Image 1 (cartoon, rainbow, N blue to C red):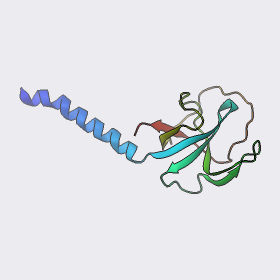
Image 2: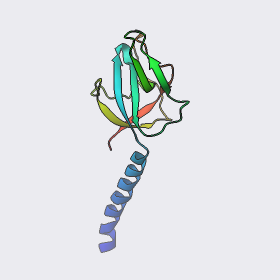
Image 3: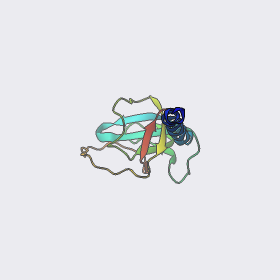
Length: 122
């Protein structure tokens, strides 16, 4: 009897450990620009990403401001609307992302490289 009552607890502990393992590969970022129509620019703050996936130096043609280690948001359908310009957050690369939402076609400058990401708690 006692063994059966411990099985749910063991399952919960294993699942919690798996979730924390996923977040160990999380990167820290900041939403630099919350441009119209989900034209968002994100700055990598902590973690090492392949330099071919981000732009080391990018100039915003609308403001003239230079940003370092940035990328455009590629996962516009799943990015939380509660994150505002200047907010810091953690993310993982979302290689399974599928775009399935409508986004307006308005233009705001953004880096030429984009990444699909998933915001996570750390």
